[in-house]
Length: 241
Figure 1 (cartoon, one colour):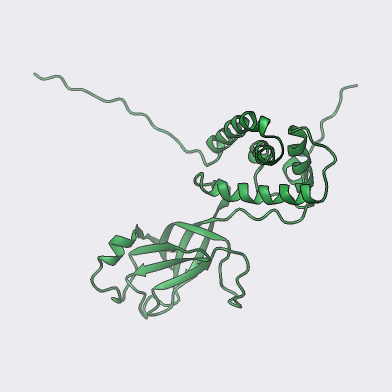
Figure 2 (cartoon, rainbow, N blue to C red):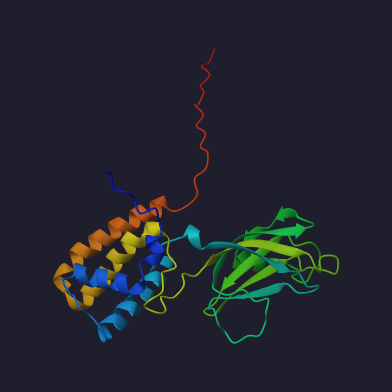
């Protein structure tokens, strides 16, 4: 009689924080950990997730949202943390950066141009009103703001700026939680935590575990994203007559 398969593909969500920590400790030769060892491992995992944000764009953390425009208001605020004490029900939390934006009028989108601080500063009249064509993003410690140019006027009030933004990776939280990480990143997540723990517990294994971590992470980053059609056209040369 042939063996059956599990019929499930949920390992990334059933692989809880405590099991990730256990696997990482086992890689440095430690078993039966508890108390302070669990807390320091959870802290290291949170630090590693923040370090991943410096590695570039993670496509599973890209989300879409819209801002309702207000007449004569150019600056709109999102929050980098998930709880800032505000009672604003329309606030967007966990935003790290804004990638692209469009002015949306009756489901017709007009792309906006993203400009930097110097370009925005060079605009002569920042209070001019009309349909926005450009936007400037500022990333503060606790918030991200988007500044529109032109400033929306009464004709634009109630219409929208639709945008794609990068979310922060969620904190580890309770030991029974799953991580806010897709299955492709489970191997490098465990390898990275083992490397972080070796720094504190077994320096002799640091170099080996760092190499394994970087290798696993590179493969995951290469696989991350969305594929698209590629067209290759040969370059044609016309000989001189």
